Length: 143
Image 1: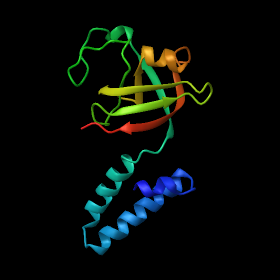
Image 2: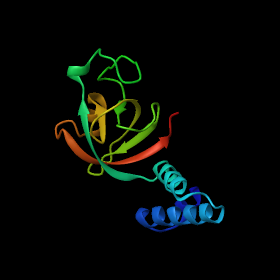
Image 3: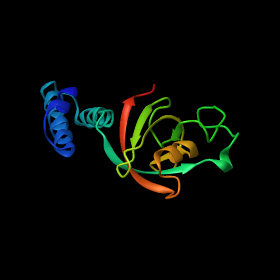
């Protein structure tokens, strides 16, 4: 639904418009409701709309261990863990207080929303806070 990025409407309205448009298209094609809902969820989840999200960091206790995708974890790499985003998804994080920006790659799983490496947290300026609200934008979805 890239056409929605060109509209000057808040994200929540753009998301609702995308869902309604997708639902209408699927209804016209007689696609079952359960498939319509799943498709709308997938499309909206993969829209590249920047949104605020709480992030935390992890590092020292995991150094040298294996991530969920089998890589060796280094707290100095620009990586992150998320419960469901595909591995190798590239995510841009922006600290709204400082303007600092980092890009991380999803290579692990977390129980929370988004856990970033120690180095990413230091560069983002969220290290001392431990948990912070940052703007998150998907740059490229992994497979």
